[in-house]
Length: 384
Image (cartoon, rainbow, N blue to C red; front, side, top):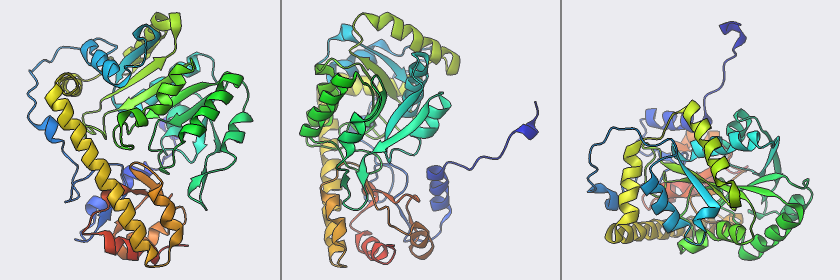
C-alpha cells in the first residue's frame, strides 16, 4: 500500500463552478449553478423568521440519534399523518449525510442495486456508490418535450421484484418535472404488485407547490399504501441552513422493526460522525414549536415560491421573443430547477459570465428582474 496507488479525482463540478464564479470579476456575472435560494442582490436568502432567534449556548453532545425534541416537532409537523410507532427518524448532517446513511443501511439490508430517475441529482451516484450500491438509471425525463417520458411507468414495471427505487418527493433535481397525482397512484399500484422499496429524497419541501400537503403527496400516499420506504429530508433550502447542515433520515411503515432499524442507524452514525451538530436543530426546533415564527416562516416560503414561478413565466416570455417555444414547458415544471440539456454552457460562461453546470441545469432562484433580459439573450445565442 502506498500513496502511488491513489489517482487524482476531478473536483466536484458544482462546487468547482461556484469557485469559478466567485473568482470572476465581471460585474454582470450570473450564478445559476449551485442550488441556493437567493435574494434580489444575488446573495443567499436569509429567512427573517430565523434572524432573531436566540439559542442558549449548549456545547454538550446530542444523543447519537439526534435531538428528541427536534425530531418530535419535525414528525408532528411534516408527518402528522403517520403513526409514530410506525416510523423512526435520526438527525443527520444535511440531506447528503441522510442520503449516505440510507445507502449504507440499505446495503446492510442486502440490497445491491438502487434505481434512480435519469437524470438525477449529480451527487446521487457518488453517494450510493460509496455506500456500496450499484446505481442504475431508469427512463424519466424527455429532453425534447421537457416533460416526463411516456415510458417511465413501463420502465418501473420492468425492474425486478423487491427492488430499491428512488424518487424525489417534489421539485425533481435537475429537471423540475414531478409526478402528478394520477402517476403517483399508478406507481404505487406497480410498487405494491412488485413489492418495491422506496428511497425518497425530500430536499425542497415547502418550495415547490402551493401547499405543504402537495409537496408531501408522494410521501403520504406511499405511507397510506403501507409501502416501506426511507425519506431523506433537508433543511438547507427551506430554512437557508446550507452551512449549518441540518437534515433527517426517516424510515416509514416499519411496523415492529423500529428498534432494529434505529439501532443500526445509530451504529453507522457513531462510527462516521458520532452525532449531529446541535445549533441548527435548536433553530429549527424553535421555528417548529412557535406558532408566530412558524406562520412567518411559511409566509416567507410562499413568497419565494411566487417569485420563482414569476421568473419561470417571465423567462419563457422572453425566450418566446426569440422564437424559442420549446421553453414553454418550463412553466409546467416546479421548484428550484429546470434543465436545458441543449445549452452550450462553455459559451455562456466565456461570452456572458453566466455560470450553469454542464448538464444545463438552471437554478431558477438565480434569475432576477435585473438579469432576465441578458440571460434570455444569452440563452438564445447558446442553444445547440
